[in-house]
Image (cartoon, rainbow, N blue to C red; front, side, top):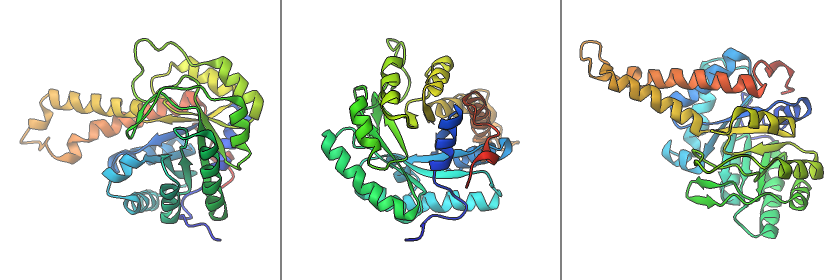
Length: 301
């Protein structure tokens, strides 16, 4: 079977495995609209950085559907002349059907998140996704344990990933694995103290395989860097860029610039520009200390 995604995209296998072997991390950046996507792609190109552009099921619905997302990303990559490796990834796909639909539409990478299911069911459905994805050269992410917090209505209590389950899941043929290590979606509560590095070490010792850190926003930099040194090769970022976008947009509005009739500060292109710039700046900061900045040329497409 041929691959179904555009030649402008790549799947995420090579970039994540290169990061794993060389002890850095690929940034996975969730997108929410055109400005978001443009900011992430242009920053990646400017800094020569391989990236994963991702959408949750909720973001797909918000942006008008799977076909809209695929068309927007592909068209932006063409018109902006994006040449660095970019994967388009389904984040936290809740069903086999959704994963297949994204593959059919042109996603180059998918996550099937069966962590809320009984483990055997999680395994069987992951196998089904892998069997469908591989002939189309699409990379697959799975999850064991669960990530604390809420993602598109699915609430996880932050169960730690089990090393034996991790080994069984890796054997399904997935490309990288998300495992709960005390990480949380969204802003971290005041009671949260640290990632569970002991559990991370046990999981990595069992599989020696690229691991994914969900809920990367808000984890102290030194903890993320330590996790990367221990086998985390993909770090998911959403909230951190949302907060940067909100702060810059709010400052623009509070300064009265949106009410400047003469300068037409209310024009969406001007209203959203500070947030766009904030996304670019924060993303540049993140990829710098994750170690992926400038690594595009070493990724085999």
